[in-house]
Length: 258
Image 1 (cartoon, rainbow, N blue to C red):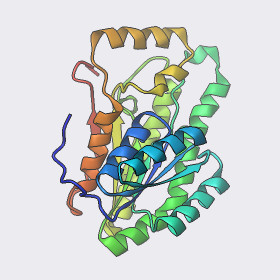
Image 2: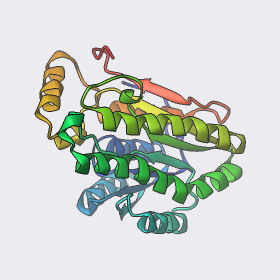
Image 3: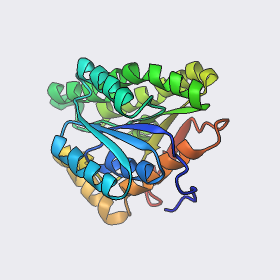
Image 4: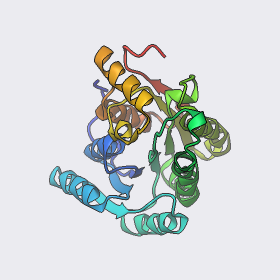
């Protein structure tokens, strides 16, 4: 996938990416830095973040790594303060940290339910709470800011055994619409990104054998999206004219029917 975005089209922007140690977050950090944004990358794995920052800097970009668990509200707020001090006011937030742990509801995998709710909902809210003041200030200063939340096609469609995960992503999509209505008047664009299957570490966390088999079978019958495909989409959204807000973007593998 190639989006014709002008080189350095995000120069002057300060981007924050959560879940940046692998997959979509990692690819997006590299893409936004390539386009001129200063990027702050957040995740739990400090070693992976350091490797990412080293690559970005080697390519001439500006990057800051902060090892943080987004479910720790105090740590997220401290990270927001550090980013503002070292890079400037954040005006692009890609809220991407998440986990997918499908299982039949009758298995009563309550620990996995809670893990998904804690990361996909509470962690998301912690990040929104920490960075919304910067996004509003950044929009006032530069004319536009972006809040892009990673949802999923599961927010719309029915996938048996994915009930809790799908419900958390429905929350993300519906929340995003409400936040757009609140923040749009202040030039903060809000978008919910709803990918179909993307080849990332997300699948490796799945423990349910039925879901594992479904994923394995789907990989044989279609080309999954790559993290770079999604990164190109994030870059496209952020580079649009300030008057344009794509509020809900569904990106699917061509071979995935629903």
